[in-house]
Length: 124
Image (cartoon, rainbow, N blue to C red; front, side, top):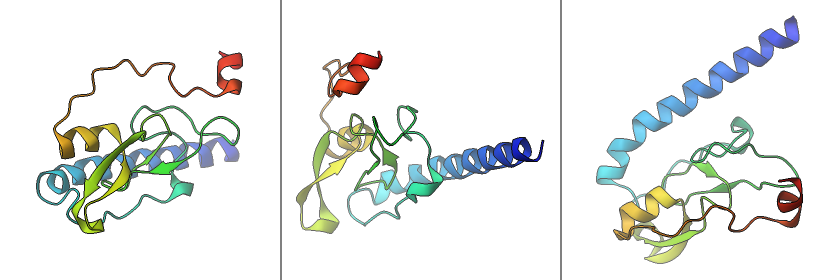
């Protein structure tokens, strides 16, 4: 029971942290996204992609940080590059939402199934 209680407490803490981040990024997006370096979410606080909610594990999903918003995202969600003012307008890895916001490009292609590793394909 103690282990269950600790897991539920960690889960609630994670949900609260993510909810707080989501609430705080709307002002950042409107005024400072790409102009100022974000505060990165710590890897050990995140168990799933903060965009598509796919779980991370050692074999199939690596963690990446969006250089615009600081979220921890999977490779599929961070397969975009945009120029960021705070980094001298060099191209940086960003998540899809930041890419759309920063560039104004609409992502039309169906990305489902793209960039799946051999382990993901065989496990599916």
